Image (tube, rainbow, N blue to C red; front, side):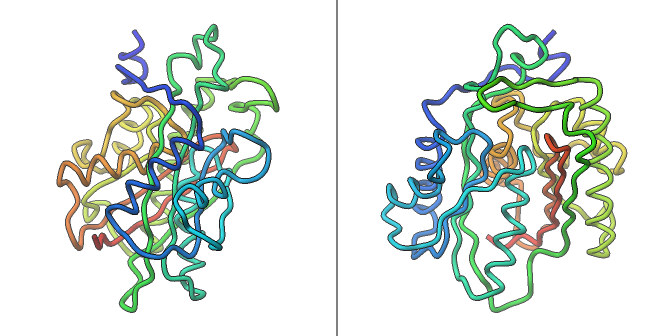
Length: 274
């Protein structure tokens, strides 16, 4: 019944958010070596209140003296981080290490059937680099409906609590509305999108979302079956899997979208440049 309701078959449990973030960052830098001007970590599960997880990542990877901070936008965090990084690159920074990392197992109540079947741990990272050519972020949309913040939350020192039906409705609306806004701002039709890389919340939510957008389901990177819902890590995990499977090619239009607690949402349309 878990797979039928959520699309999840297996998940991973990690040691700590910091350890996962360091490992993801190391892999990204092995693929794209060079100096880094800023480390940005999107997470809702830091191992400590302060300092930022990004500070520990900076030290572990030998990235001396560069900027480092964390960002909390829940399941939209990676896309919020992407848009934030793009703005900083426009001011003169050259290379930014952006990481999504979570250990949601630490704030999951394993006796709560509404949440225990969904959440998991994971991390993934990208290196974003300034370009002297055209801007490859063609459009984006950020938003939040704070009036609905209570339907998915984790109080300080507590566990995740979720109103499943309300989250389902809000998530589909947020996914469709944000993606539509981004595509309109970019002047792009849904038919032109080569790949959708969504937050891996629930397979039923994602299928309802792309159906409403008029995008074929086979043009979506869906990895929730193997990894579960990893919040800020899920979009970069799905992107990494798409790259590994050779589903993304130079010049492709790639639509990223996140939605979740807040109720926050974010989407961004990229012209892919490896």
